[in-house]
Amino acid sequence: MLFVSMALQYLLEFTLNILAVVDVMGMQGSHFRFTSLMLRSGITASNSSIHSLGLLMDGCIINTLNNVSTSGPSVLLDFDRPVRFNGWYFVTSAGPQSAGLDPVGFRFEASTAGSDWKEIK
Image (cartoon, rainbow, N blue to C red; front, top):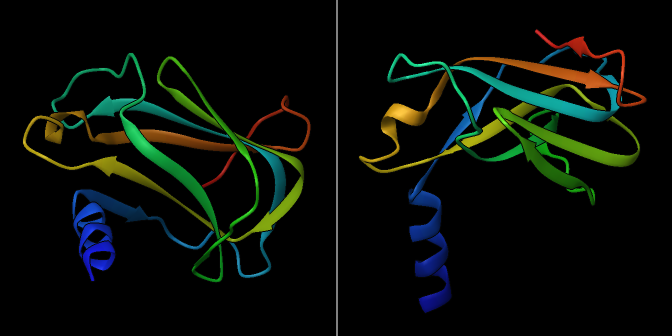
């Protein structure tokens, strides 16, 4: 019971942002880049303020081993093989100190080779 309570508390500490389904048939990529452009506080993002990033297939989180890294305002999600997806999500930290750090302007891109990025809208 304590584990369930702790897990529920953990979930309540974060805000989940599920974005619109990309395409009914899905898309494929092995490299993904989320870049924060503007924060809720109105300032331009200089580093990443999101807790996690992931892909969806028909509304379900794709649980595949991947590598997540950050570079300035970008979060990079890399898979060792192409992954089919039709949606994506990011999670921001919750709490009064982090509210102004939520990205309100951002770009999400996919690539099959880590170059020639295509923006996903």
